[in-house]
Length: 185
Length: 185
Image (cartoon, rainbow over all chains, first blue to last red):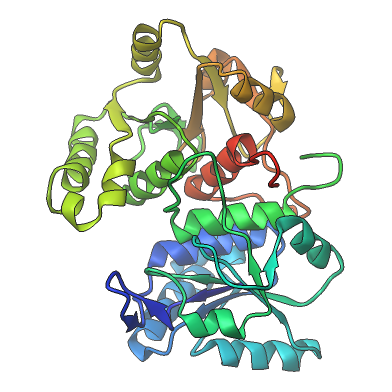
């Protein structure tokens, strides 16, 4: 799973590198750990933002936080800070011996290669190596959608409102992909 | 839907009133609005915490934030700050003409009157008036479980880890209860 801080858009549809939100590190790593995700990439090319993220992660994995809250440590240990999506793909390919299938998500409808949750669950069940990307700020840069292999259906509900935080959206997507244990819902 | 700051436990299983987290207001109200929840109660008896919450809500519903981000306004407008669960029940009963059915959730297994998500979806579909309570800190006080009519099954996954943030847990529970539109998953 990857949280993308670049390339994304700001409110005025300008390309930016967004700031790291420490709540994302806490919430997304706990969600990732709960659903058996192997790694959470935090993707930003900004060195000060990388340093900030590293400092938070170290506090919870090595510092006082690790003793104070061991379950937080277990979650935070899943995080790796990397400079680009390409770096993550390269690393996964080297370590796992195969390139990952890239999934993207978005609140809005996107281009071809759309994947239903049912199809996606099948790929997860078949143990495919997957990198599931989430955007920050006002959404992922277009080239990420072009680079991705599949685009996961937006979360649709009975309302016309879809402005979930990335923390909430990621929790819902992971639950849909990996949270229906046999026998349960 | 209600976010309970009292009565809850701290890490040492002492009864406390927990502090308001502004991220909860943002994330939970957006999730609530996305899934068609009518109201989000923030429940705390502490006056300084009520004032803090009111200040944040006003910023986004009346202040600069309302102009800057109208979708945030729409979400934040669902929040009401109240002093106790009883106050919420009383208010809902007066306004809706019937007392709400109380649902609670917890990461751990709890007592009788357990409800599967399938059964809960049926009650949501039958338009029952429901107050769905989430705890903060280290979980809801025991008397809340005794007071509640139903206890929703914990979120179970294939791992032994379940330490989701309340923001993530609430998103997952609402998606399970109200996010499967006919035809979609």
